[in-house]
Image (cartoon, rainbow, N blue to C red; front, side, top):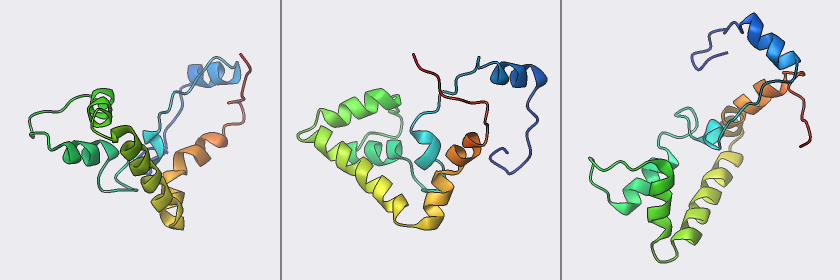
Length: 117
């Protein structure tokens, strides 16, 4: 299923690669809470707003977090913001359901086994 609830056909060659164990899914933290279905603002926007950056200044995510962490107690405040965001989602079953949708969907792919290194 895609974002708009449309079925997505997986190409045969990708299915073959999946069943052969040749596919790795790289999904960052944003796959859960950083969609507009969960929050109307992203962590990026929250941090950018706290820094008071001009509208024209849009550093990439890692740089923005570095800028925030350079402030007094910035690292601690960033961790608190992340924890607060996740706790908020966990406290509302509907938000939690939306935030974990991707995880539930990918868990149905039995051929996406975990391999050791």
